[in-house]
Image (cartoon, rainbow, N blue to C red; front, side, top):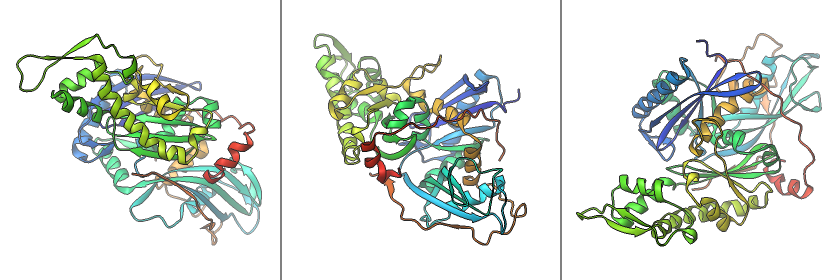
Amino acid sequence: MDNSEFFVGLDIGTNSIKVVVAEASDDKLSVVGVGSERSEGVSRGVIVDIDKAAGAIKRAVKKAETQANITIKEVVVGISANMLQIEKCQGMIAVGTQSKEITENDVRQVMAAAMIQNLPSEREVVSLLPKQFSVDGFNNIRDPRGMIGVRLEMKGIIYTAPKTIVHNTKKAIQKAGLHIVHKVITPMALSQVALNEGESDFGAIIIDMGAGQTTASVVHDHNLKLSTVDFEGGDYVTHDISVVLNTTVENATQLKLYYGTADSANADTDDTISVDVVGKSEPETISEEYLSEIIEARLQQIFTRLKGPLQDAGALSLPGGIVLTGGVAATSGIGELAKDVFGVKVRSYVPAQMGMRYPSYALGLGLVTYASNLNDIGIIADNVVNGAAINQTDSAPRPNVQPVPEEQPKATQKPAEQPKKASPKKKQKGSRMEGMKNFWSKFFD
């Protein structure tokens, strides 16, 4: 079966690798296959053993192929926000000595010019987001192709990550026999599905609660403005249960999944739970309240650490509040705990598609949604980031291909062949609240 109209999202998580296959038809995206496999060679969302990770990716892809009845060769992969840096970029080229029609190759060249900056050798550009083009001084152009001019400029945002993270991801996928068509920073993909139009526009916080880490990301004006990572997640909750109750990790996992809640105030003090204790022949009993206190303590600690950088950035004043997603977000009572810690409105996001009604599938769905929504300029930008060749012969010589020097604020975390795209146009932004504009000016508004 021809899969040129299909998009395949690959979510490489700490505990599981998930593959989501979706078909784009008539501007609609339908999930037609899902595959999931226990992770190997992955720690805290980062690949640490390429061969083991490649094997797990292969197995997850095989399951998705069977369900979707297609052969998967190309994937859209999520890149962890670990040590993410966000910077403005700006470039300019001379289209010719006289006005000429601007081609796709000119657009590629101005994007490449905007990416020329003194990046540290250990970092790599993962994504380029063009914000606007200018032709001979005329600004706010979304797509300059077909216009005529002498000078073409572009302003945008680049997202960079450590080369080690990106290289290991690419190598594992290559060893699994797959080709990457898009690399997407995970919070950008999540924002496609977890936030509604108003939240993306006026601002909201996505907290992605994985097994190995928890990532808080600020989205405003449809752009990722800040991302901070806490290197604890659901596995630490499991570890706490195991240590406090002196039971195996397997038993602790079952207790967390079937009896766990993050709201000890509403836990039942009368209901008892039987626990197999290491070194004892007979199980012991604990109350549901005691188990919830163990879970609540760790999650409260994670939320409290994330609150600091979010509060410092003023993100807790954004009208969209907080959206929880990721596997740990399925924990009962976690919304109430987050409200108590952050003091803002909180909701959880769970995909509505059949077979995916669990928050851990949010990223896989976000990846295919991101890819299907890319317009032509977005696809060109991805090609440039991925090193697609620029034809130097289809237009006049470019003696002035250079970046435009600019002071660049940063938002930094603390410790090819393309399938056809469905390309719905983005809605134009409405007016912004003046106070919010003033605050976010340091984040590129």
